[in-house]
Length: 96
Image 1 (tube, helix red, strand yellow):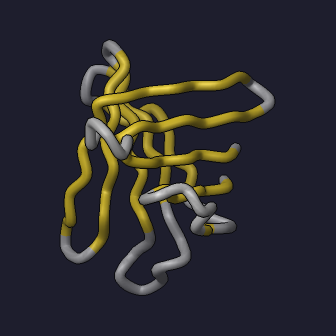
Image 2: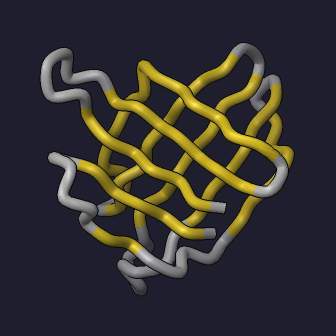
């Protein structure tokens, strides 16, 4: 799975896009905050919420994707293989 998070230059809106063999997902209106020194991006799609943690305090190159339904966690992927700057302003790429 490959996730991209970026900020729209004109509107400032945070956007999320993921691609995988199971399909593609695009979300907008995300939020970003620092939580105990780690950035978390949050996106909502109906009753689902997607959280992308950008590293940990111990390992900035690790990361986690969490999926919630009705405020209950459905699953977690804890392995960020690559974080890169792709040349698009304020974009992060995550490969899970």
